[in-house]
Amino acid sequence: MALRMWASSTANALKLSSSASRLHLSPPFSLSRCFSSVLDGLKYASSHEWVKHEGSVATIGITDHAQDHLGEAVFVELPESGKPVTKGDGFGAVESVKATSDINSPISGEIIEVNTKLSEQPGLINTSPYEDGWMIKVKPSSPSELDSLLGPQEYTKFCEEEDAAH
Image: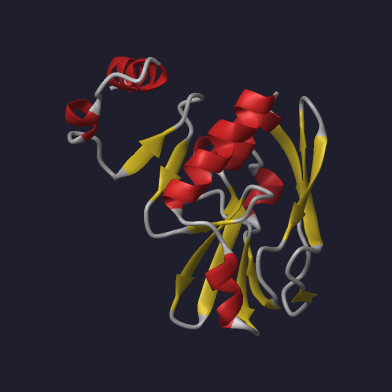
């Protein structure tokens, strides 16, 4: 699978057709130049957080792209349940072997659950950023804010342009 991912990314960078190799990947995702996964069904902030909105709950974490750039996570600071979050404001931080980065909320609402596993296992952010490495669950106060976030294709393009600029 890793070889297929490398070949697909290389073909993409060389502007060759790699659609055939992508048909066999599961779950569906796009590949950027850094092999970061971008999942369908999620919304993305330009500050590299993701949101999965299901019913009245939005789960939030950092993207695979973000964790890749941060490096190995060694400490995660998260708020308590019941606290409000405001779109664009920080709610926590991830300390890695490279740097400490603030984590911003892509939507406003009330925190209804915090992933306490991250205090003992901060590396879940690296190994499973979209599943076990989620950070908080929020009851959105303004669900329409989700409409201003990026879809998977827009976020992939944003990351590629950001990486090319650096």
